[in-house]
Image 1: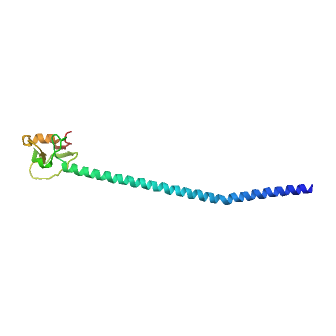
Image 2: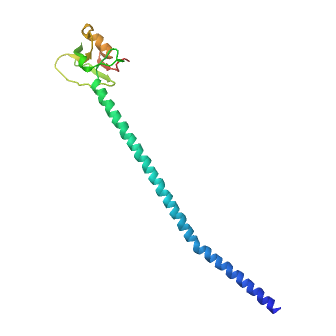
Image 3: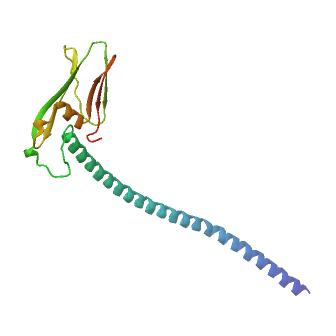
Length: 177
């Protein structure tokens, strides 16, 4: 019976040793697996960042293109401010346009407040010693614009000048509204 116990003890010893060896092997490879996983995560993160940079660069390019279009339109609008083109659906050559200075004015006292409501035009305010408020603008037109009175032009341009008891109101709206 001794040989059986001896073999049994040897088997138990081998199983225990093998088990301990397997545990050591797992512990030894675990950092390698963790390192490999960390390395893969780093590579994936770098690839993701590179894609995000490309998308950001593309968006910046589109933003710059849109900004250039907006600046171009803004410049075009600034150049056309205060102009009225009857029948604006047709092409008008600027060389064919005629110009005319139009004015409107109301009497004013120094006690009156002046209110200006301006939607889209550049305005220049000048003070003077006369007891009145005056609006002066230059219009560009084609055809027979001289037959239209200054008041009619201001109405077409959507510019109004009104005097009430304690104030004067100047309103500049969008043409055609």
